[in-house]
Length: 99
Image (tube, rainbow, N blue to C red; front, side):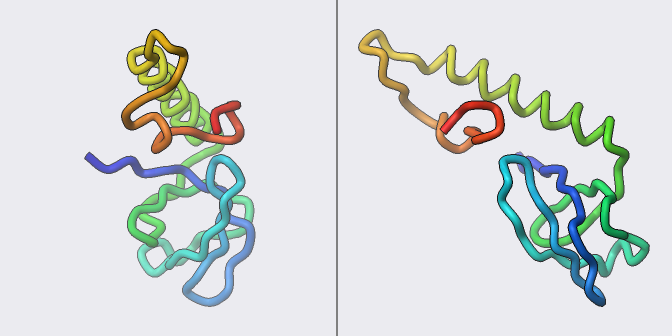
């Protein structure tokens, strides 16, 4: 299963866009499949390609869902000694207080 993260477009330069992902990470992605992307749009990015433009409410809903999944995994993986185990680091996000 692939998680397709929403991102906010910061700038567009030709067939590429600079985007900011949840947690503050930035990336350069191709807009070849969605050439009408503009700064300020929210998009879904998969393997370096913008695959769909979404509205801000949908982006926030997706981020909230990922945060909730992370919280559930944290609760399931907590060990009696207080340490975390397993896959938790892969879903952690600085924005939601996970590190």
